[in-house]
Image 1 (cartoon, rainbow, N blue to C red):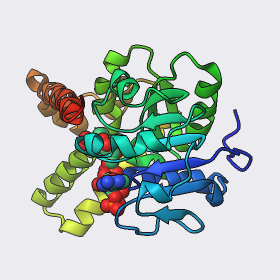
Image 2 (cartoon, rainbow, N blue to C red):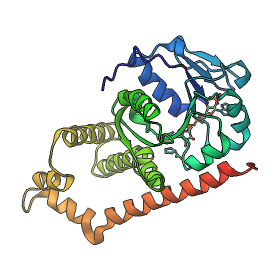
Image 3 (cartoon, rainbow, N blue to C red):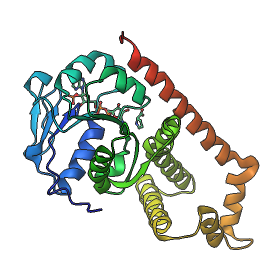
Length: 277
Ligand SMILES: NC(=O)C1=CN([C@@H]2O[C@H](COP(=O)(O)OP(=O)(O)OC[C@H]3O[C@@H](n4cnc5c(N)ncnc54)[C@H](OP(=O)(O)O)[C@@H]3O)[C@@H](O)[C@H]2O)C=CC1
Ligand SMILES: O=C(O)[C@@H]1CCC=N1
């Protein structure tokens, strides 16, 4: 499937265009999407990208777009759902990037749409090497194909058949970059304790993460096997791994971290439902 969007030919309304939707849009434009095909609705009226029309209210946005992507916070959904519903026509595919909010919630709020899908991007999509999880499509193959094509330039795209795994996916891939950044920060702090100044420790920690990520991307080995290649028998790395692995403490910490993030998804869905009849 091509990753060029120069002939995409669908009109897109972004209902809410903050950090996440802007990152997706930035990459779509890099992939050739015509900015004249996009309208962003954001109350602040802040520009989003060259050539993309920004309006501050939904009344100024074109109705019945091919695609309407909701990019507000989940807690806001109840406040804006009526405005969104007014824009939706029978041909509109509704995409939601909202953490937690289910396809049933979307169906209840937007019964008039052609199809509804959950989309879970992560912030690195801006580089074209992000991760996007998808679920839904209401059994519409054409809609599924269109949205897969739109998401492809963002990075690794994965359809999740069991929607009940979507909050788990969100924890792993949507929130995941923040957990990795914390890990890098911890390496930076550890480096400082070993005597590096802060900028040097940060530079080395970042470069190490980037180098490991690059190898993970191309290698067929598992992370366990890659770690074993680094750790010479009786060497320095093994001494460090023994600390991380003792009582599986890093694995336990990560499992607990992901469980907490996933649990918050259900709470956000409940908050998004408030105010709904
Ligand atoms: N941040 C991330 O890494 C990820 C976030 N998400 C999801 O993306 C969504 C947005 O998160 P994020 O981009 O971080 O948040 P931001 O706060 O950056 O963006 C929220 C957007 O909603 C807009 N908004 C607020 N009120 C209204 C309104 N009444 N009408 C229209 N637009 C409105 C804001 O407008 P204005 O710009 O004018 O303030 C802003 O553009 C969330 O639902 C989150 O779950 C999903 C995956 C990853
Ligand atoms: O923190 C959040 O709720 C969103 C979902 C995944 C990343 N950011």
